[in-house]
Image (cartoon, rainbow, N blue to C red; front, side, top):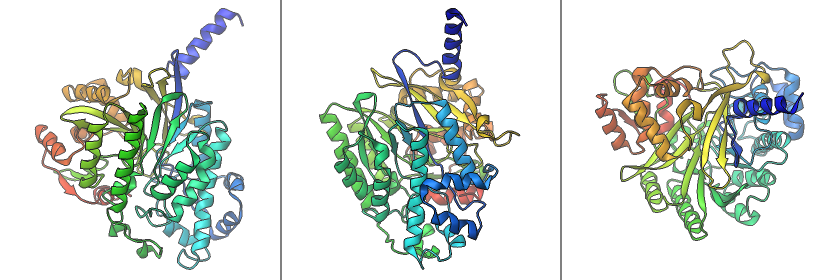
Length: 493
């Protein structure tokens, strides 16, 4: 092959295959809401075999099961996890770093364990904890095997706990075990003693971002801030899971105090800040359209914490650059505003788990090494409705610069995007948002677009209500426990 032809092929590959990587740009991977379910398709005998294996042998075990890939409405099984990790490693061979937006563990973790284990959690809590830690080690090992040189920076999700959903305990054993399990994947991005202190206490930590010397990642355990934290709806004793106490609002207050201290330190050290969390602030808009007439709405955080957090956004807006979150499982956005001006973007990344009837997905982002500005992303997904759902069937769903015309990814740019959608609901960008929200599984009906658009642009419930009124839509029905919203609206988790 001649040099001219080789150069042409290389240029085409860069433009098409990598989403136009430009000079001075690097890539990073964002993945989350794996919700790995090792119980899926496993009988009691197989579970005993799996429990007796070291985490390093789990991949071989699941490969031997030859399970079909997880379907819409189910959590991630071994086949889907292997498929997603393989696809990610092919799409970005050497990421600058990897962000994980939380929820390593599958839904109904305790009850699924009790259904297969020889002894229940209450009867043998040590065996249960050992199995849970092995699961975390297995997932961590999958990252290490696929990305041996990459720093992997995670946050915790509401399912990530020894206790039941939303009952993670501050200074508890789960935080200490996770810190010890994940520490090798953090490399030199953290100072070990500081990480151990803050993570073992609150599940929070600060890290350096490889390739961005003047930037810092602040990881907030926003589960403590959730409106569902320690609610009776997920009370552990209902599932024979003991050793957990209702911590009330104190962990959330401690997490916000820690966040303020971390932001102040970054300001003093002249660092720009990225945030990483699981539950984003704002309104849950996942299933409002399932109700008849008025929509349902639930604040994802308690009002006390949202108010305090927005004050921090106003105080430290000059150093805050972008935030990444998960939790809703959808490809979505939330924008914090200060005195009506877009101040901080929370980019919500799609989940690997298809449990909410979305296709599995992950996103590869680009950033400028000099400025630290995020310049775009591409979404890779697996169409579970297609005939071919093997690892090689993952494909690029869309590229942000081509689809949304975004040359920078920040609050102002995304606010402008949704203003264009407001001005013209029939615009191509509006159609793209509706189509890609559930990762090309089922589009948002055009009729319901204002509900989702208002949720993106308004973090505070009163502002959201005004936005719907301006769209001539009924006043929403407010729910105080966001975890119940989805069940009531759509019968799903």
